Image (cartoon, rainbow, N blue to C red; front, side, top):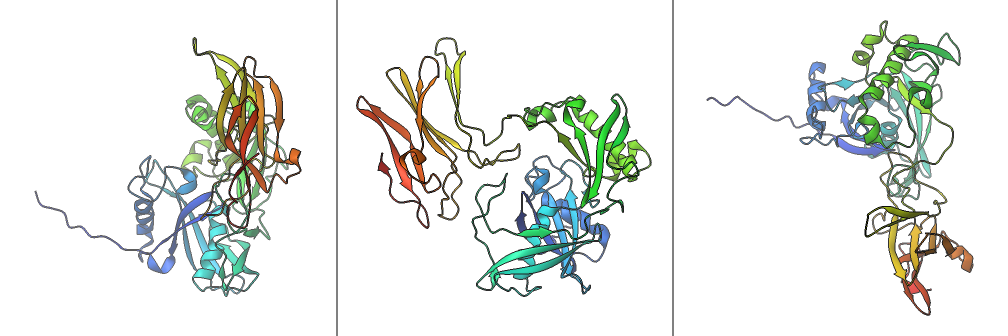
Length: 411
């Protein structure tokens, strides 16, 4: 057997995170001259098609399977030209139909680091021209010591840790793909969807085409976790049918059956529900009592929600239940949100509580927070577990300082 000739392309790229997304940034000048080869480069770099993207830098998640092709803009109205691509995970395909605000956020610091825009404190304006849509985007990038700031105290839902805040402005977002903010129907459309009939929806093209639909009308349970929704083939078929009908109404395709071939990404489908409680990755403030004989649930205790919850299905920042202590007929727990430390700096938790529960029923007997003792809950936190003896309950208390916390002490 003769070995086939092989060679490896070495193409510079920068791995970035912007918002809740991650992707690779390529300079246009570093890519092969033949545009037909670009998709092959992007697929290989991310590791597609492969559900795990094992042989690339993707993570088997659409939020982490993105690329940006950038160059210095020749336009006097922009600093950077940016082409966005969504790299499919299961298919050998790159979707260029829409845009990504998350990845755009990372291009501001990138432009300063590359010297394409002069960094000026306290913040620098970076003007992006999105090649996909022809729309301008403006970024305000914090600057420290002549460079794009790398540290900060800003947090967003779905991202552990914190960093610098980058403000984004869309001066003219309407009609980014279709040329019109709304369809000819105006703010309310009725979509003819097979097996569902008439579905009321609002279709808006602002930065990206989006279709807003009543989730209950499509049979979606807002409390269901993503794995449950993704395992429901019939539900996914209904959702795609709505997207397909919206694609026709937007004028993106002539036939509904062509919608997926046009783009698996746009239009985005947004399901709306009335406000309600729902489980999330941040909703860990619970104590469950289970029978040691039968395994059945005896009672459950709902702890206080954080002051600022990093809620949402996509959030991987998980608060902690720091141990239960059972003493005689009572259960003592310390509950609270614990943000992830970042390079040695630990931000204060949003809420911290010690609660005493009746072991037989789960009834709350009492609960206390640092605020009950005249302390600022943003500056002082309890540190479990709770230690109990016949004289009282004891818990560690930590006070925030500039970096980290002072030594704990018992309260």
